[in-house]
Image (cartoon, rainbow, N blue to C red):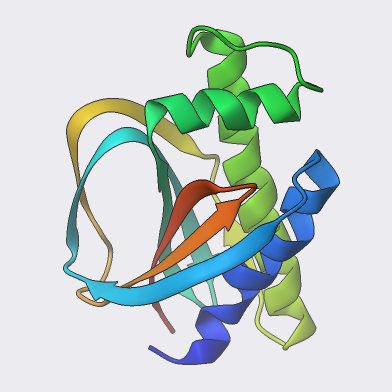
Length: 153
């Protein structure tokens, strides 16, 4: 997978997270995964269409999703992963992917994105759109966050 398809997602994380109130943003590693992802916690998937096609799947655990929602809601305590917290975390997936689409446009690649789909629970299985999935491990204020990218041009 060409790095030019990965960098917009990494740039988006470094751009969006500080705007939401996170201070320490890091890229913690990159690895390849199979096209069948299994995750427990919170999974947000967004489709990508246009000159690049595929999907991106964001993953973190339930407790960290509540922490992210709390930061996004100006520090309001989030005890339950209720409708408000789910909406906040879904909006994060939307913001990250829309920002990545903007970075794609800056390198001359036009893409559109779908509305995010949020799933949560144990052993969530997702079949990615291509056989090659690149997982970028990110963190914001110590909260681990996976960005799983599966695109073809």
